[in-house]
Structures are given as C-alpha cells and as structure tokens.
Image (cartoon, rainbow, N blue to C red; front, side):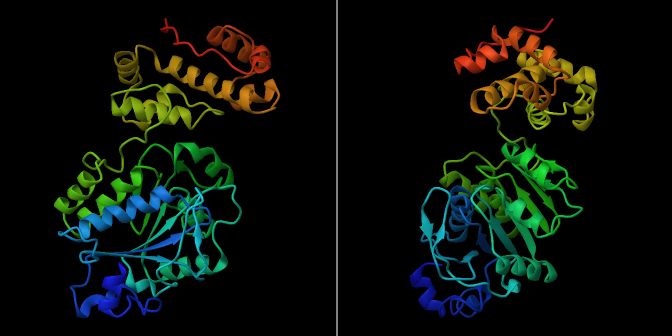
Length: 355
C-alpha cells in the first residue's frame, strides 16, 4: 500500500498486526487480498509481475491505490529482503493473521543460494493451511511448499528448467513441467516467468472482473491472458501447434528416461498416428527424430560444460550404451563426443529430415 494510503487508513496493519481487512472503514473491503512471502534470493520478476497485475486492476484512476485489490509483502524480521539479481526491498508488514488474505504467495528463487525460508515462515505456512487459506507457489516457491509437506497428493507445476531438480528432491511427487500454472483447489503452483502475470490475471478475473484482468495485461504490453494448461515456452524446436509444443516439453523433461512416443500421444489425448502427423506437418520431422535431437543437444551441453565421463553422459541422455551414443552423436554433429569436448564447441546444424 502506498504511504499516502497507509496513513489514511491507519497504517494498514498497524502495519504489522492486522492486515488488509482493516481498510473496510474507509473503503470497501478489497475483492482480492494477497500476501507475499519472499524466499532468500527470490525472483524479482515473479514478484513484480504479480503485484503490477494486481495494482493495475485495483484502481481505475491508475493511482496504484489498493481499492479492489490489496497486497502486502510479509517477513518475520525487518531486515531487507534480497532478490536473486541483488536488488533488495523491505517488508510492508510482519506475519499477519492469515485470515486477512484470500491467497498467500510464496515467491521462490535460486535453489543453490542456501536455505530458502526460515522456520518462522514454514510455521506461518502451516498456519495458513490450518486456516484454509489458498497457498500459491511461483517460480521455485513450489519447492518451498513441498519441503513444508504441503503438496502431498497435489499436482505441482514447475518450470521445465527445474523439473529434474524437483523430481530428484521429491521422488514421491510427479512434477508437471508442461503447463504455465495449475489450480489444484487451495494449492496453486506456477512455473514462473511471464506465466506469473497470467496467473495473477486469472485471479483478478475470478475476484474482480475479466475487464480488470484484461486491462492489467494490456497496460503491461502483454497479450490476452494465457490459460493455465497452455504450454510453457521452451528452448526446443519452434512449433505453432500447442499440442506439439506440449509434446516437446515432455521430451525435454524426460531426457534420461525417454518416454515412448505412444505414451506422449496418450498424455495429449491423441493417437500415435495423429501425433506423428502433427509433427511432420508442423516441424517436417517425426517425433522420434525430434526427441533424439533434443537428447543429443542436451548431451552436447553436458560435454561442453561438465567434466562428466562420456559414458555417464550417454546414460544421462537415455542411450543404452556408449557406442550407440557415439554413433548417434557423430551422425548429428559430424564429430565424436570426445573430439567435441576437446574443441569445446560444436557446430550446430539443422537436423536432416527423418526418413
């Protein structure tokens, strides 16, 4: 809440112990009330996109007043909170009564930057759960919720970039690295990036209006909101068909243990022949050829950036043995894996059409 508005309503929480509902004496209770918890080295983009979507939907006069929407950045201590890019900010309130919010959002960040949240925040998340408040994990916020034991039996959306990290840490859960976000009742998870704006607009449309959500995205120079089940953008072959994009995402997140093409088709509610036809129409290649290329490109990156043995890389990218891997690698790039590592750079060529 802006300082001007905070003073007018009596310090928005006293600014620590109450919360958004205390504004009811002067303004209608906001239709959408969101509290944010930031992990250490949190992702600044995820936070700013979420809050800006709320801000633009909240006030017709664009004065950023918390009228239709209200938001708070919470923390157990007053010290500045550091983002992954080095920019720091301060909390707007302490850990207030969860009942003051419709949603509590955990904004994740770097996975290798030490402990993401302290015990006080984990305890607060348990309080939110007990109070029936919907918890949202954006970016690697899904890791925080899972570590707190709050995602058991739930669908969990993660970025394709962190899918293997998630699967390794939580072998009893199956991450979904295909969709932008997943609404699973009182748990919502979002892969992060631009999808955070889509999720925030989804909530604005639910609680405020579709027009308010559309306004927010248009002012942010974004297209109309994508749906939660839309495919995450990725670094694989460009495809115009959403089903092909989702198939490629499945391939990228199942490199070490490749899925059968028929299995991918079933998950997309397609037959194997339909998927084959879509790939050939969209990319000019068979699904198996695209999948093989994705695995080989991953192997190339491992050769260039790690000291892992070639045999280990072969297994990690789903090849049955080193000889088969070397043969496929030479066919794709024109040199052996060992020579590629020695040169430190592999010329990337367009893949030849499959027979």
